Length: 563
Image 1 (cartoon, rainbow, N blue to C red):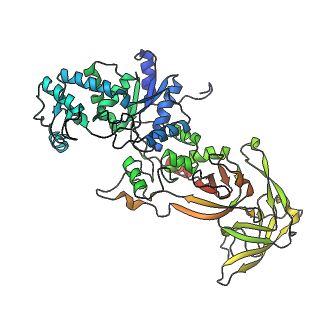
Image 2: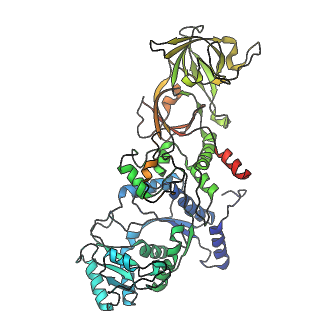
């Protein structure tokens, strides 16, 4: 952070500032990002990544990456690898790489300590019986009939659970707290369950696995985390987080909760994202329509654009719905600075310039990016036969249509004035070709007689154009707030059937040199595009539209300010 850059503040940083003032953690700031490797990260995780790593950087502290790998039936090395790739791509590097499974033995010994202190017991109730006996917000729970087992009996049973003597789900280890507590999380929560499944790191060494609420705070303690930052749904779990640490007499971090990201026209439930993949609604976790970081990266989003979005939305204690237009606004702001302007015709219409010399080719000078003078320029070929967009011609033009019409004139981008003289149709009456003339004196948009035209259109030389597949993406869902569903309503009914349109296009020859992961491009008058890193082949490029040029966020912001 430069000395002249304003320091962003929020309630989390205010807490940290107060801790530093009072010396609670000796001036240390140590955060962590603790995902479960049971799926690909999404944009909501990007907010948490930027927050945890950003705070560590701002305060000269440290940030760990820790995998909460306590449920082997849902976790996989594929997800571990993808998470590490996503964190690096966003521009961050962890100070320590850890796994909750690193602490399995210590967590077990701490559980034994709780049993010896009379604070934990082995329970034979089924999961359904545990749920029924937990009570409600207005009625206390009922104690388990196994709650008063002796310490010796609990130690024996817990050791036998570890040894694999009992069937899956037949017994659990529960904390002995208060079945009448107003906070349901304190009503004898489960610490361990029996789960005979192979773990991606520990193999078959363990057949009992700790629950998140038990493993999380102790993992934070072992790593000497100062500020355990998590989303708002864990606010009611904080008393349990603190209870375990106090009962064990170990180092105590501070848990702080913030509101998670909710984005319009988007689902971010891992369960629903997994369903989208498994049911074939998308091509995979990295489908460019997905809100996963992998999908956004493939679509052409930049880490700088995502970090800017996370900075703009900030952190609060109140759940809200963020407009996807703000995300797109932040992305455009970044892409506008870095994207070369190129020409691509997505729905081609052939144009023959009848008065242009056959066989002649001109190389016209194009500025790569008017926002970045250092980006330089390039040569673009111009010839007798061109392609223009079908939408840039109307045989029967409506009022205020200023593009090409029979007898009308437009300017070709960076080239000449063009006049349509004849429309050629096939037997079915479809327009297949325009025959036009150009004004040789109008190169660069200037004419000796000073006449003006009202429209400039883009084009590509047919002889030199590169055939490409272009994928145009729209919202994956048609409903604005995908969290606002009626009871029993199937969220899948809101899938957008037009979320992907594929077209065969022609692009200027410079795009033949595009490389996966390379610079994004602005297709003039079309939007921002990125070469697809997965499906593109030499001589067969595939471009994904990252975002359109139209920025509706400014209108939304203006309306909100007016309200």
